[in-house]
Length: 350
Image (cartoon, rainbow, N blue to C red; front, side, top):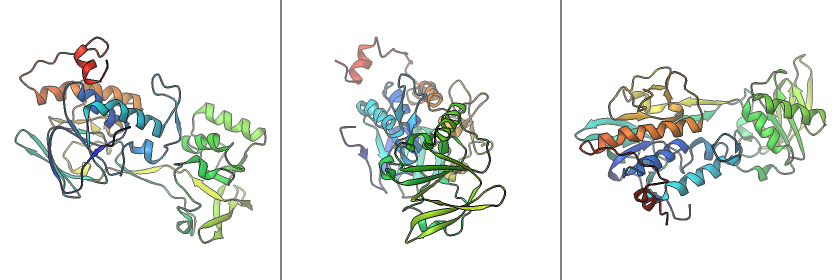
């Protein structure tokens, strides 16, 4: 995004059409769909920048299932979405969590943990799975290495160039980073507790091919101890499934054991939660509370797929009903961006 984002300091007070909780990809695309209908948006996010998990956990990880983009990184997708919504001038409140949501005349009042208040006609919860923390492996003394030679996310692949990497895990993240870092590291070892993987079959097949060619090492067992001083690893101890111990030289350990999701205050918004998700209808993606919508991974409905592209679809349908709340006396006239000169003008198309 060539122009700086419009951001606000904590403790400020605002009024808008739509308040969006969450500035990940789905929240950002919602700005576009709502902007086409002349609806102004403010976004609140607990992170210090837009992009959600894409920017926080895998900014350089390739994403393959975004329509018309055969491959895009998490940060690349975020940047493209920011460029797309630039004409609508959304306003952001970063490093803040919405603590309360209350009904007021004409809409809703949101209050953050930094005493920012936003009144809005409509609220859209696009908070993904809530706030997230990585699940840590039960290895004694691992805290001393975190941030220096133990990492739970890859934000810049180049920092691992020429390093001896050990990746632990059997899911998509572990396999994806094994494939993407195999040519970056001087040596890479993948460790999983058993010879069965939960990742995409194509990724597993590719990984096994690399192992067969000697380009990576594949080991089964668990990391049982760490060696090194001043936060810098020199090796790890592997205990295999027969309880045999061995040592693997290692500069960096990347454990991918999944994330622990916490809804936080959203759980107290009175939205009829089911298994920590918000049930919605599939016509408008509205919650059980009129005027409050939920899109993206936070919601639940029959047939739900937790895909970014599904969230984009949900945002488009949500925006239609949001317009009706904001402009109850106006008739909603659906327009195609390819044929409407009015929409093209909004988008800056000449």
